[in-house]
View 1 (tube, one colour):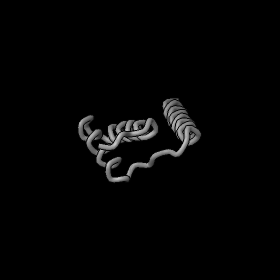
View 2 (cartoon, rainbow, N blue to C red):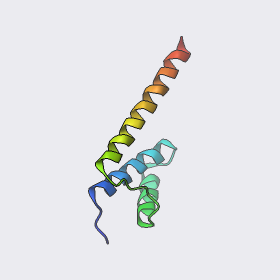
View 3 (tube, rainbow, N blue to C red):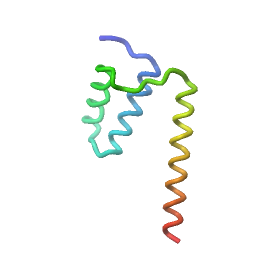
Amino acid sequence: MAKRTEIEDWAISRKIVKLKREGFSQSQATAIAFRMWRDGELDIPKSQRQIREEREKRRKDYLRKLSLLIASRK
């Protein structure tokens, strides 16, 4: 079996988290993510810069959703 790079491990981990948020169980999400990696369907970032950009996007999305939730409670 091929060895994975650190960035590939990171991408698999992120995919598992996303799938769990969509309602899949841990074991299903893990199986799906590894199958996607094996078949070359997983988006693997090319650099640490892309990882930072994705984190920043997720942070902004979270803050936007949080502010909408707070605003809806007022």
